[in-house]
Image (cartoon, rainbow over all chains, first blue to last red; front, side):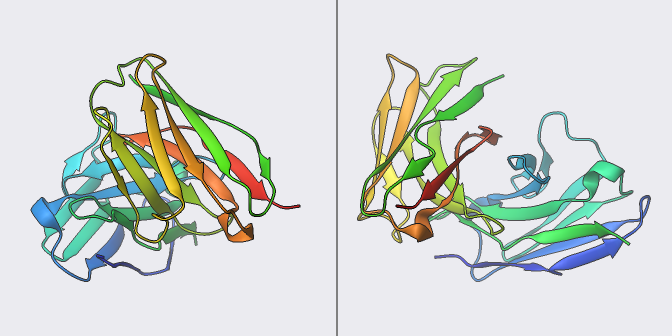
Length: 108
Length: 111
């Protein structure tokens, strides 16, 4: 099973700032099948990035994903109020599919 | 775009079987991998398993002995059964396909 470790656990930033979230895998993610989700309180997760770097439909270009192998990054170039939430990475290249523990982006 | 809606009892007694159904609209269930994922209150996400439209399944080994996922293409639905539940199975249960998620349904295990 691939274990995904997200860091930091909590990120305290102000609106308009840049956020950089990390997701490290215990072994290489097959075909870079790595997704990022944003989850607001009381809502289902929303897909932001798939295939490590492809934005999902309707996702603004302030979100970008990068990385390969075992190290992946989600960057939010300028934080909007709706971006203060919890972010999860997920690998779907190997079974069982697994999620990281999440990074909470909170208002500083 | 495809929409998913979970349905089923919100309260299940310990040792009984949790049963949920996901109804698919806006698209056909006769393609793709259809997943169940859960999230205990205040915690992270756990993949339970998926079913391909042909009926083949893949389950999380941590739950495999208790999980059955089935599909009914005539009704555009797929279902989850989790047997011998305990309080640790209390969670919001989501159905998902290709990054589209249902709104989730809270299932509480309690006598």
